[in-house]
Length: 364
Image 1 (cartoon, rainbow, N blue to C red):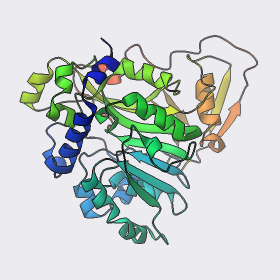
Image 2 (image 1 turned 90 degrees about the vertical axis):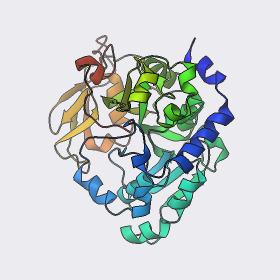
Image 3 (image 1 turned 90 degrees about the horizontal axis):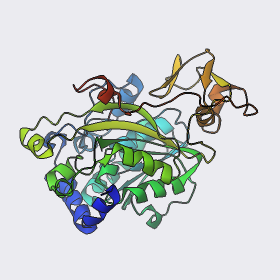
Image 4 (image 1 turned 135 degrees about the vertical axis):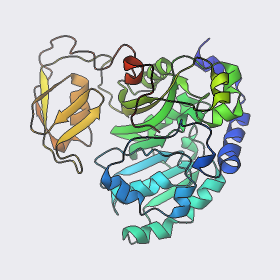
């Protein structure tokens, strides 16, 4: 039985109603969460902490988690946050994109959106902007075509531990691909399982609301990404989740869950495998807050000034995106040397490779 069949057996209307109730009424703050699925144990960079310190207290209080999903090179960009809640991440990104950038939040919970919208003027003044550079829409992230968002209008899509709550995850990825510009990026954290979650657990309101039983089997997600046009999904970082709730652990059984940050690029030319064309890059050290190195994903830590061999896909991820001006590029595709190397691992998550014990790392 595949993941699509399991999803189709869930009642879509009931799932959405349960999520609205859980995040609009049941939870009053992150302290009400019963697991650490949406939490992060890493230290945030100073510049993100500084931006977060400027966010209104009520917005912070209504955030149901403790992670933050922030890619690099954001100045002047248009960003879409899927499942923006009370707007905490939107307002941090609002500060980082600058006055001429734009951040759009989409959420299906009116109570959360009321909080987010009530503080737009506060944050514009806080950041020294002439007017707010954020917008909020009430909507379903599976049906973004029902919102006034143009095809190819978004530079970056972010999401923080939300896609697992969607009933039709394929629709979310298809809509995201449609909205992104060519060379745009979906940079997001979510929860994944080491196997397909049984239907009876998917129907458990608490497990679903806690971002567990709606999690996809990791290999189903990898294949779904490629099916929807994101041909080479890259893992940025991951960590094993600890539930720390005996009753929920007993219900879950032996299923292991991982919180994973992915980046998916909208690049039509990406190949199914890492092919070697003898290409390389040199990072100039010019991306703000990334002077000494650029971190593309878990297998590409590129030090400033050092020649770094790359496969064809990685070359394009740097040369055909917002990162281009920050690199020097060497080589072309006139000669092929076969498979470059496996840029991933047989089992994708380092937390699964190294130990049965939970590992640290960024999450949703």
